[in-house]
Image 1: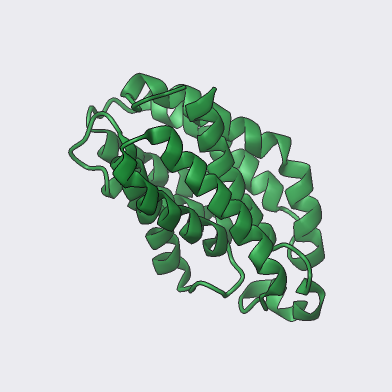
Image 2: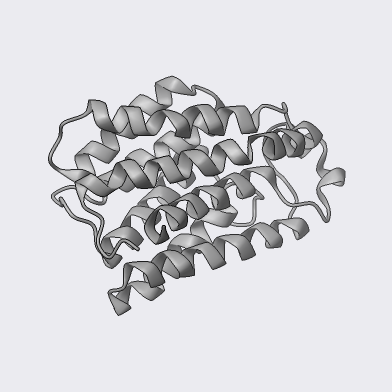
Length: 211
């Protein structure tokens, strides 16, 4: 279990995220086919599977700057709506860590809050709109509340639990954006696919820190 995230830990963590997205790509595509274009899983797999290679190609010693630059490159790899949102989140999360080489509990919470803020800003969405923000914002808030304990594992575990609950809460929300809004009646009682993608990102971070 990682106690503090150093530069050399990121390849393992990024591979863990990539594995989760690969494992759930088909599930995400099936969910998205009911409410959108049906390509969400492929987008998440392509974007996050590219991150380990993107990370290795960068030599920036400042972790925040390196992560932010990764988001910029990710945006070019998956220039779709969700790809852009995730890339924007990654970039903003990185900006919250500028000046740091190693990442502790409070830093991880700051990254997740920045990630949520980046998505909200880019997507112009709010909590309750039934989007990826509805899993990532609760995760960030829970991480922030847990950060005082100074334990990285507790922070990501709290974020994971909150993200999972956030996904369940979307069953009772009405979509306001994109094709999902057209099929709003079909959304009742169903988890939002974007929120699931956000939760899987947190799950990947959790796996990478715990394994």
